[in-house]
Length: 233
Image 1 (cartoon, rainbow, N blue to C red):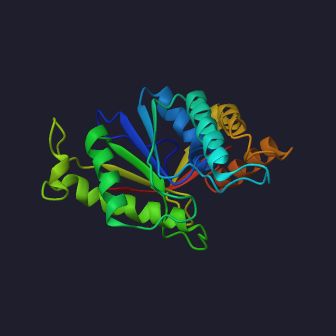
Image 2 (spheres, helix red, strand yellow; image 1 turned 90 degrees about the vertical axis):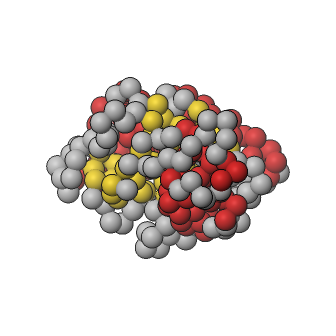
Image 3 (cartoon, one colour; image 1 turned 120 degrees about the vertical axis):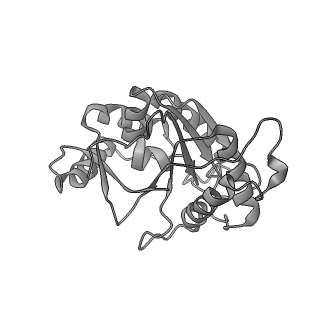
C-alpha cells in the first residue's frame, strides 16, 4: 500500500491509454492531478471518441463524437494533462484486440517514452464493456512490442527507438494493491468530471464521487482514495 504513485528515479513522463472520454476522470482524475502537481508530464491516448455514449435522441454519433472529444480536452486542461491524442478508425463499443491496435499503441509508447503507464484492467471480474477489455489487453501486449527492436521495425526511424515501460497501473480493478490519497485534489477531480457534461447530468455527482472515494480509502484509513493494481514491468 502507498498513498502516492510510485515513480522510478527521474521518471516524469506518464501515459494513460484509455477507451473513451471520461475513463480517466471517473477512476483516476485525482491521481492525474497529483502527478501534475509533482511535475510529471501526463499524456492521454484515447482509442475511441465515445460516439455511442449519448442519451440525447437528437444527437448523431458524429455529433456525439465531437462533443465528447471537446469535453475530454476541457477535462484534461483542468487537470493539467499536456497532450490528448485520439486514434482514428475505432468505433465505440466495437474495439477488438487486434494487431493493428497493438501496433499503434506501441508506436505512441516509442514516441513518448513514458516511464509509467496507466490503462484499463482487462482482467477485472464483471467488466462488461468490450472496449475496456480490448484496450487493456492490447496495451499490455504493446509493452512487449514497444521494447523489442524486431517488433514493428517500420516505426524505428526519425529518432524513434524501442522503449521499456518501468511501472504499470491498471484500473478500475478488483485486485487493488495500491491506494492513492486524493483528499487534497478531490475538488479538481469533480471539476474535471463536470467537463463531461453529456455524461454527468445527475444532481448528486459530487456526493457520489466523494462517497466512492471514501469507500476506496477506508481499508487503509485514507479519507479519500483511488485504487489501482500496480506492478513493475
